[in-house]
Image (cartoon, rainbow, N blue to C red; front, side, top):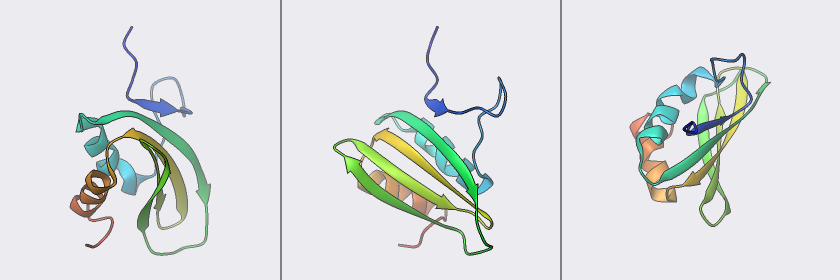
Amino acid sequence: MSKSLLSGKKFNSNHQTYIPNAKTFLHGLKSMDSVKKIFLGEITTTKSGKQSAKIIKMNEGMWEVTFRGVISVQKFRVVGGSESELQALLIKCKLIKH
């Protein structure tokens, strides 16, 4: 049985849960050969605010990407890829400005 690239808590047996503004970014990550694994984090609610995203280097080859939606926040851990590749994908998905 093959493993899924996306890993994390599931809403039910067939669907993974992520905030809507992260969808295009996650699908872009899945298409990158350098990305080995994506871990989905919990979704927390927050006050209404501006949508944004940021990348933090956890250690060599692992990144934490934080997405802030209008009323929610979710963190993802990404194994593989480079900071420049992730930044370029965030810009392409119009989640940050360059």
